[in-house]
Length: 314
Ligand SMILES: Cc1cc2nc3c(=O)[nH]c(=O)nc-3n(C[C@H](O)[C@H](O)[C@H](O)COP(=O)(O)OP(=O)(O)OC[C@H]3O[C@@H](n4cnc5c(N)ncnc54)[C@H](O)[C@@H]3O)c2cc1C
Image (cartoon, protein in one colour):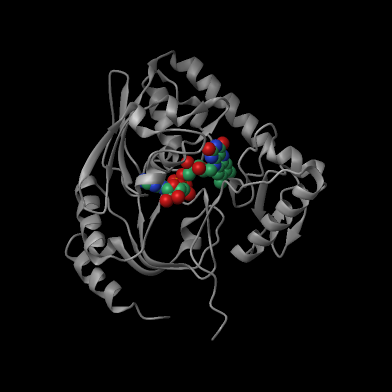
């Protein structure tokens, strides 16, 4: 295993003074932190657990001037096989708060969307039913403006508290969040989302539960949830559905190594067991080329590609 460079070693020492050593992992395999179950090692992987720790960690990273990658629970990323250089800040343990006041839920970025949706239902709050089957963290869902079945995060997010590389906590409200299709302010400012206020409406618990169950059944019947994946591989091109275009081009079942266009839902690339990032990219590029040839439509990945290839030069 390659030794950390001197900058990263110094950062590691500084971080050990800010959080517990158990929250810092070296050469951590990202395949353990992605729903694709793919990805090489991250040099440093750190898991702050509350806003104070996040702020201290960011201050050190800002001072160290090293590359930084923000990570939720890895349900929308493909990490290349060579892993990630620098530091990965994982928000998966940011569960400092999950509370409800009137119709506002406040939650740490690390809560799974499913848990927040169920919390809303238990408090008879409606508006988050659409999110029940999206297997991401709340922070990742805000970053992506995740959505399904006519709902999206922009409809319910009221305020976000985020931290920049200076360690300062800032609050963003309403239009400042700059939501658009699979886009938010945080794509542009690079800050880490730490805590979110969701504005919901008072509803009827049984109706909320009924809707959540209905959407779960729809998802389970259509999506290949039995295999690791990162959900829809491509964004919805204007005027089309990516999955329909791929199916019409006859690409269901197309494979490179253990990566395959799902037979159940052509919009998903799945990992049939031992797929590498290189295999998945092989499938993605072939799908893009053949859909372009057949329909003249450029498919753009929704899955975010991070990290570097394995160095085969040595
Ligand atoms: C089976 C399956 C079904 C899915 N269905 C849907 C669906 O219906 N609709 C949909 O929109 N998506 C869907 N997805 C994709 C995914 O679940 C969402 O995009 C989710 O919101 C990503 O959250 P995450 O925590 O996994 O983020 P990650 O995959 O870890 O990260 C995604 C991006 O968000 C950034 N990020 C993560 N957390 C933070 C944070 N706290 N602050 C700043 N940036 C952050 C990361 O840097 C990265 O660029 C599906 C995925 C799977 C595997």
